[in-house]
Image 1: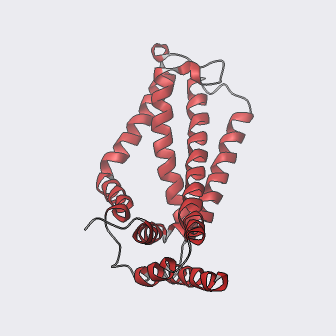
Image 2 (image 1 turned 135 degrees about the vertical axis):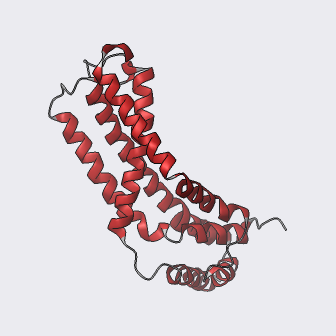
Length: 211
């Protein structure tokens, strides 16, 4: 029984791996994810910095009425907003693609039927293992990458509010989180390439879709 379950699980894994793109450009994916994370993080941290500068660590952080530091932050927020406007169709498409596997089975993707049939033959423990390995772990890695980009944005906004009168620690931390984010995004690239398929397969096998 256990051997049969293991074979079925291995078969599901093979279908998932075969569904990956022919070549995964890890560095390209990491750079794009890093850039988008920095845009989101800079906008969010900038708004927090303007509304509540006391939340930032630098002693020199000032309020909105003190001149050019606030103007720098406002300028950064404006650039982020402009990016979102220019890329709004891409952003909308990304959101729709992320929602799609929760709304309908992705049976048009090669490997869906094979992976679903193999996973359906597995006991619940192996289905949970599938969810952890193919859905939650890559999502957690991607989330960690986002946290790193937000941390980088925090130190940038903090330095701006402090009129860039900061020690070596600020740029060092910012660069460290930036590099860590790039590495984490690169590590998550392969599993994220089939994340939508994994979500759809798991949902099809466990709860199913409404007719």
